[in-house]
Amino acid sequence: MRDISRKTTTLRTAVASAQLHLSHGTIDLIRQGKIPKGNPLEVAKVAAIQAAKHTSDIIPYCHPLPVDFVGVEYVLGENRIDVSATVKAIYKTGVEMEALTAASVAALTIYDMVKMLDEEMSIGEIRLVKKSGGKSDFQTPQGRILKAAVLVMSDSIASGKGADRSGNVIVERLKTEGFEIADYSVIPDDKIRIVEKLKHYADNVQANLVLTTGGTGLGPRDVTPEAIREVIDREAPGVEEAIRMYGQARFPLAMLSRACSGLRANTLIVSLPGSPVAVSDGLDALFPAILHAFAMIEGKGH
Picture (cartoon, rainbow, N blue to C red):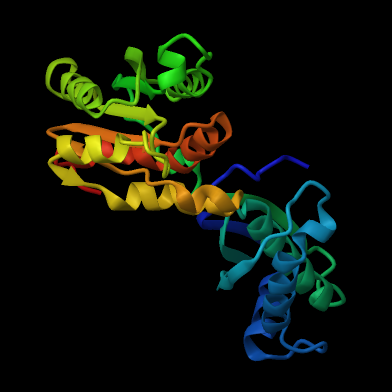
């Protein structure tokens, strides 16, 4: 089974369809409510709902997930019934298989209830019609390269007494997300120097995104949030809330982070904690949704 523990929870929706080919006479009997076993459309709807909820019991690599909605609709034609199944869930992985299973079982249930009346009946195409809510909904516009800068705050690393790991984690992730790395620097936990560096990234480098790591805790030398608030024009509190919420679900000490974020002109500045694990969690919380921020900053809205 694929590890989805690092993925973020979003509203996932999928629509699948199935076709059932049968005679015109059988269609008429369904319309008139004269099928001996009862109303196949209503029974098939219940069966589809059950199938969606139990997909992981049938297909080994599907994750068990909390299904929030299953809807089943039919279109009756001259010689065909089109089944449409919609499934929604607020979870970390998509619901395509749940929708496909629901549509398939609905078609099979109708088939079972009318098979004694129509020996030529067959199930046709079963396909995914559409899906939404996953990573593909939050991609960087094609052909556009975004610039990023990475700033590490640490007295020990800046003095050569330790090696940077967190900053390197950020750099590699940004490259994976398609960013051009405009600069990567390590400086001490000094508010004046942090302010100068952040202003340089925003005003001179004109980076789209600046990610910092370190100096967000409760220690006497943790001054990164104060430096960022001195630099930014507007806060973006939802960003830091998402980072803390994601981290808190995995590690109880995440609540002690004072990470903050905001805009200076068109540069988005986001602070991440200092530990490599916390940085990795923070990046998972940010991407891919943070990519949408850059279109908004340019006035392109949602």
